[in-house]
Length: 113
Length: 115
Image (cartoon, rainbow over the protein chains, first blue to last red):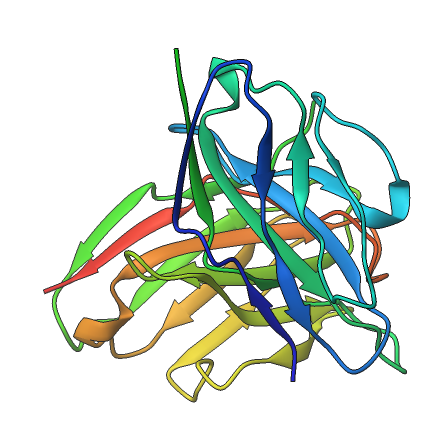
């Protein structure tokens, strides 16, 4: 079974402080991991995916297969980072077809001035 | 930049009524999805669609649900006889390809309220 756990529903940090949003997953195969973000009154949008190994808006996430984690980090939080963040997993399948995303509960990040 | 669009943005219906939620995926995308999010809960997968047929469906997607791509642009989700527990935000998404690493692009959602 595929499962994604985000243990923190709410996270509040001060501007300029480091941020870490936790994500753990459960999947028997080799997963693809994503972070999606939803800013106020906007749609869900991709923030980053582990396969790209990129930094977006100062955020990075490293896939740790030993700990089955994909935590999202940013060294210096900014007020515009306030949003809902969702960790998601997509598993590999043997046959062609659309790949579903399995989402975590989401973490609401608030950056205080 | 192309976006996924959904109509209506809000829908209120009586229990037992049929509803059709509409989505226009990004034009060159071939893979389509419906997800839902009940208030306060996680985003849940409902169904995926490719090559005019369902690729995968979740346990939620029972006989009351159906999907269709009636023309070259629209992708619809029909709920035949709505229940109170169908009240949720419904998201449509599309992707260019079906690889696990492929980005899915989400619409703004339709908020469905069943009374």
